[in-house]
Length: 304
Ligand SMILES: Nc1nc2c(ncn2[C@@H]2O[C@H](COP(=O)(O)OP(=O)(O)OP(=O)(O)O)[C@@H](O)[C@H]2O)c(=O)[nH]1
Ligand SMILES: [Mg+2]
Image 1 (cartoon, helix red, strand yellow):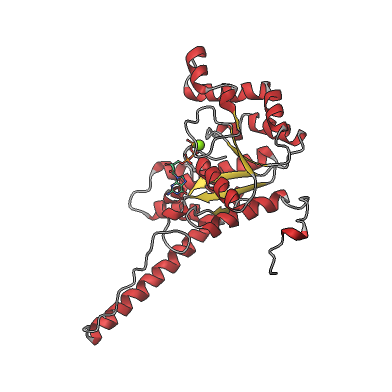
Image 2: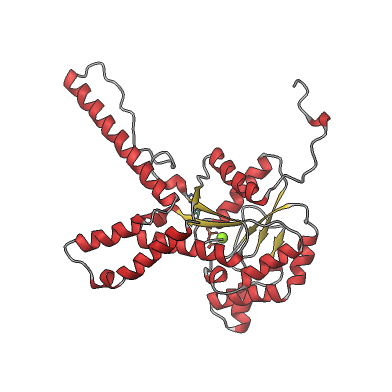
């Protein structure tokens, strides 16, 4: 789950590849009636039941209303899904959902879907994706935190939040280097050497600050929001709008702080360890593997 473009389908494809490499059987389920193409062919696909294109054409819906219609149609014809899932009730299914936020927050559709899966004895874990680009704008980031929290509270299923697209971040968490090694030059003078070392020290400090700043977004630090309000208040032109919303912002900060339920697990899809780390959190919340059959001894590597 997660807002439009937050990397849900990429998450699904990454996990499919990861599971296949690890020899774990996984299937992709597509619940996005507007989806166009997938890296992996979905095993179960809502588009076999209904497509957004047909709904828009035949019923004259716009894209958002049409999408809600499609999912309501799915819920009203849930025996189709039950039948499809019936063939895979021992397997690991990765379900790609649409990005319309209202599906998780104020329509009971996803909740009903979870109840159906629960009835089929499937163990579920909700994975909420928020993209790392959200941190560029604190208000946008906090609205993301609130929507993650809202999905979590509404669905009442084991839930993890993932900060996607971490490869676009600087520092330890991402791929963008801050420190570029400068080669030692035999001909450099003592003063040049000193300046090179100073530059390196400064970059190391910048990097530590970037990593620390990132931590405040992974474990939402409500002070980030207060800082934004303060900086506006101390700025040259405090906008009437931010003054007006100060009490509301404070209340939101308080809410996030009181619940302290939201934290994000960073996902860098270019780093296998990061992918494995996210998957292990999902497994853990579903207690995946606890009731799997133990391996036969003859499957163990011979020379051990
Ligand atoms: N660099 C980078 N780009 C990513 C990552 N994940 C997704 N993207 C890009 O972000 C865009 C949206 O990704 P999707 O996976 O389609 O996002 P989505 O949440 O499924 O989008 P909708 O289904 O339209 O809501 C695409 O252009 C992806 O290539 C990532 O981890 N790193
Ligand atoms: Mg998608």
